[in-house]
Image 1 (tube, rainbow, N blue to C red):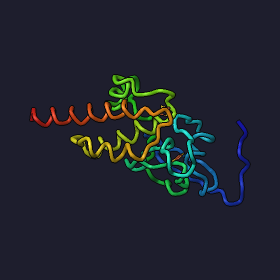
Image 2 (image 1 turned 90 degrees about the vertical axis):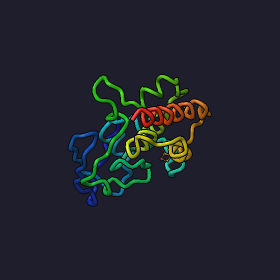
Image 3 (image 1 turned 180 degrees about the vertical axis):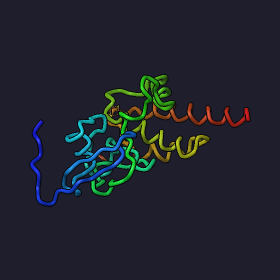
Image 4 (image 1 turned 135 degrees about the vertical axis):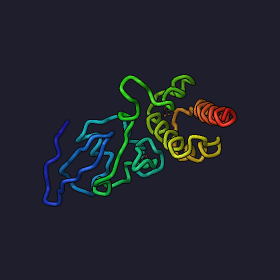
Length: 169
Ligand code: FES
Ligand code: FES
């Protein structure tokens, strides 16, 4: 991969990436997506449209589902960013990843990392989220393979699991 030449507008940007402090010296206006993929070699975050429409590039910025293609890297200075590479704990998958796996919710997989992070952000904010809350997030994501029925199975399972938990309390 070609290394980008430094320019006069470059600045040091330091942020927490998947729980670890990382610094890059780069143009603060570059998209976070490019820095993740090209400089930090985290290629789980995908480039789809580059225009904020498909959400293949979703990361969690301060816990919020965020299109990294539209996020200037300078704006994440000092903030926590989570990519798909940081979601599992060692060999232990995140509960949302477990449900995607159990439902076989992938075809080509290009949109999957973004979908998983989007769904994980909903669950993180409200562990008792209902199907409508998950759907509101899913509506932002495009799956070119038309894998929506599987994704709907995932969010129903998560929402039903939360209801069962609530009923037990
Ligand atoms: S690549 Fe970012 S929204 Fe499509
Ligand atoms: S699984 Fe192929 S784009 Fe969604």
